[in-house]
Structure formats: structure tokens, C-alpha cells
Amino acid sequence: TSQPRQKKYADRLSAIMITYPSTYGVFEEGVMDICTIAHENGGQVYMDGANLNAQCGLTSPGKCGADVCHLNMHKTFCIPHGGGGPGVGAIGVRSHLAPYLPSHEVVKPF
Image (cartoon, rainbow, N blue to C red; front, side):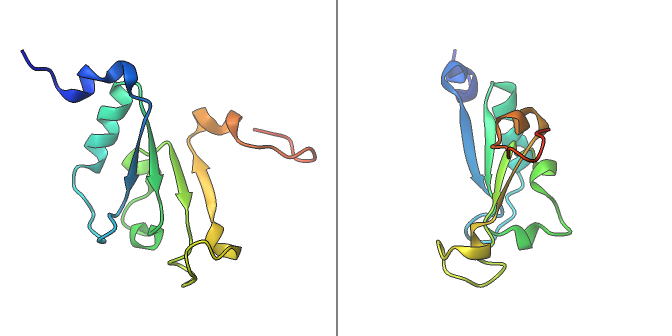
């Protein structure tokens, strides 16, 4: 009997990384299913939010099922990759990962 890969490797699954929409600008239909499969088997989902402009008004990393998403703003601000400044972007996480974020000595953590 063959079992699905996600069950076969569940004890070794830590995370998956998804670029959404894809590098080609395609909104893959199965992204929510992929996130669900990862979560059901103990994994986390890291979303590359390099083209977050395309998501605006249509979806969001949280709606898709991402646990972590970096908001790389290089496309938003038309600057080269790794150009620093606003292109560095922010990182968003679901509440279960918030305690692991860096904190500030003046600002109280969550």
C-alpha cells in the first residue's frame, strides 16, 4: 500500500515555502490545500510575499494559510532586489509565532 508523501514524511516535515502568486504571477488554485496538508502533518508555511501588490484586494497570506510571510517590497517600490531601504520589508507571523519575534527593551512584547 502506498501512502501519500505527506504522511510518509510527516515525522520529518518542518516547513514548506510558497511564493504566492508564483514567480510567473499565477495564483495557483491549490495553495490553501497545500497549506492545510502541511499543517495537518505538523509543518509550518513560509510565504514569499515578494509580489504582495498582486494579493491586495484578492487574498492575504493569512487567508491562504501562511504562518510566516515576508513582505519584500522591492516590486512595490520598484527598487532592485537587496537594495535596502523600503525593499527590506517586514515579516508578519501568526499569533502562535509572535513570542519568538525580536522585541524592544522599551516596547513591551505581545
